Image 1 (cartoon, helix red, strand yellow):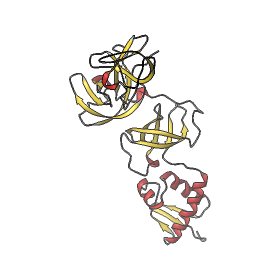
Image 2 (tube, one colour; image 1 turned 60 degrees about the vertical axis):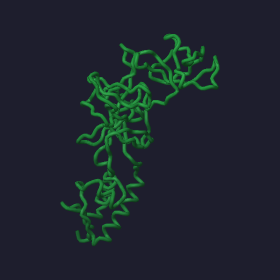
Image 3 (tube, one colour; image 1 turned 30 degrees about the vertical axis):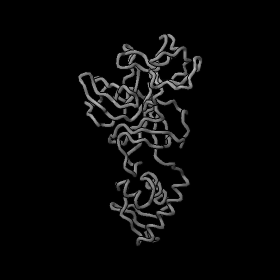
Image 4 (tube, helix red, strand yellow; image 1 turned 90 degrees about the horizontal axis):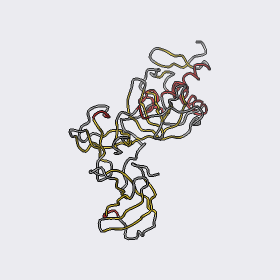
Length: 281
C-alpha cells in the first residue's frame, strides 16, 4: 500500500505531455510532473518517488529529496507565517505547514525548529508539529547495550540538562554535568547510551566512559595535584567546561577520579579544592 509522506517504489503506467503517471493503489494513478521525469524512464519501470499532496491537495510524486519524511524529525527553517500557521522549508516545492495548534510556541520567519512530520488523518496532507515530546517513544530494557553509539538531536534545555531525540524515535537526556562543550537547540550529536531508565527514557553521554578511563585519569589527576604544590582549586561545583579545558575529561569522569583518590586516602577534599594528603594527615 502506498505511504503518503514517504518514498515509494511505484511502477510507471503511462506518459503524457505534462508528466508520467505511476500506479498508486488504492489512490489510483499519481502524477509525476514533467520537470521530474527522466528521459530514461519507460512504462513498467519501478521508480523511487516521494508522494505528498500539492497546493491543490492532489497526490503527486516527485524525485525531489525532502529534508523530512512522515514519522521523522528534522531541523527546518520557518519560511513564512500566515493566517493558517507557519510554513517550513523542507526541500519540496511546497513548504510544510505547522498549524497553530501544533506550534510549541508562536513561530517566526527565519527561525530554525526541531519538527516532526506526520500525515493528517482527515486531509491526508503531510504536516508538521514542534510539540515534540508527544511524538517520542519510550525504550524497552535491553534495546540498547551500554556504550552503544546513537544519534541525538537536542530539542530542549532543562535544569537537569538537555533533552534529546535518540535515533529518531526515543526520548533521551544528557545531564548538564556531562556536558563540557557548547550545546544548542537543534544540534545533531553522536552520543553513547549510558542506561535505559525504568521509565523508558534513555540517559546518553557524548563520549565513552569506563573504569579504565577513570583509573587512567586518577593517575593523571594525582600527578597534576603533586605538580601544583599539592593543591588544586577544583570541587564538585566547578564548571564542567573549565574541567574539560584543563583536563580534557567530563565532569563525571573528574568526580569519579576524585572519589577514587579519596577512597585510596591520597587526597583531602576541602571547601575550595583538593589537597594532597600528607602521611601525617
